[in-house]
Length: 242
Image 1 (cartoon, rainbow, N blue to C red):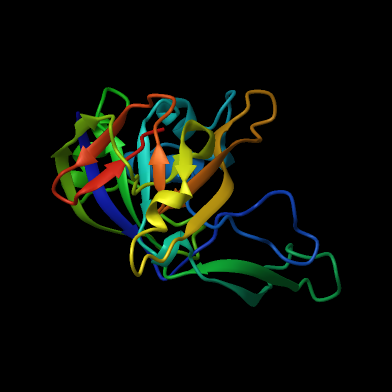
Image 2: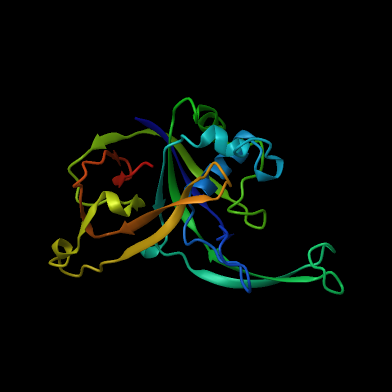
């Protein structure tokens, strides 16, 4: 199977959680599929939420069938977060006197991922543009305060595998059984596990996020559900496409 592989990184990122905004705006701990489709859509030149006129935004309508994999490059799958405070003084930001809104956002610091996108009819244009270092709109990591760096772009062939003991990418938690006791017998083994509910799509009625529980870990897994996995032999990584 052919995919386009690239490194996605930046100084900061902000993937807003829509459920809390009273005192702070919080971010998801990793890039999620809807945000990744938004980046892909910006490269292809598809409109987002601001110009939505149909059931879904244009980028999601066209790319929702794309298969992707996300490998976290940050240590133990965790990206450091930091609260940033700044002023929004455009005038209409706040109804208070002076029209100044104090914004407090939680930003990811120095995020980095290796992204895989399966090349098919849905993603062919995206792959062609990114392989030629082209983009129709500037890609951002969540919002336009956070420029995205896209490097090391390459078309690679992945091999299908089933009998594996470790997965290097994020995977849906319920698809695999984690066997923590196998690795604990190894000398100097430092086990870690990152887990978070992340958006995977938009519902049709309100365009609200649909969620799945994801895990990244260096612990052994058992593929009890016989999920198809793929291996990037060049980087020696087993990945999970979703």
